[in-house]
Image (cartoon, rainbow, N blue to C red):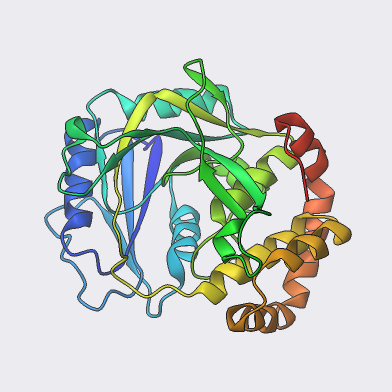
Length: 311
């Protein structure tokens, strides 16, 4: 039987969490419908997944980051439909896989996100979650932040409030619970060009809208996400800043790009990011030309649609 949904799960130094996530997936879904691809991003102590023999496994010889690992897993996927998750998730027995497949089939140019159930702080019990989260709004810049504002105050997704309806448009996906058509993901350029971590949700979401699609949230599927105070690996702010600049330079007009980049903190991480940008000018030019060829609307149309005031 051909698989209908490929689940892509990167992991790095996660101890037993990938095992618990896979166990939760198999206990709550029809195994005939799904395949799981686990991408080990060069863990220091690789976890043994042999008890789940049907899980497809790949290991990066060097770290390529969560977004590079997601892109790699999606490229390897056999199914036409994709679910991207983190390796510390919990699932409910609510027919979620079939629901995802049906939603993608009826909305092939949509990036979907589920209701996110916050776990952690003493519990991984999905029936004892700490709160529900419903996609994100896009913060282009927080002008009320301190003058040398943190990078997280520019071009960032921020959890949005619940809205009426079982399904509705959201400005941005968020929560590591994204499902979509592989064909649409590839068409909008996926996660290509991003480094290490950060900015993937805004980048994918904006490209989906500007290419004539959209992003939606469903309340009918709820996935638990274990939130942690610290990641079990090193992350680099310079990569986050690089990704923000990369996004601007590939999909925004030049004048808006320069204005938004000017709001980023002008510190050592910014200087490293700019150096990386200068080393990738050909890649940026090629990506920009491709997006200009597929976009049917602009960032201004997106902002008008959601009532967002640009700086």
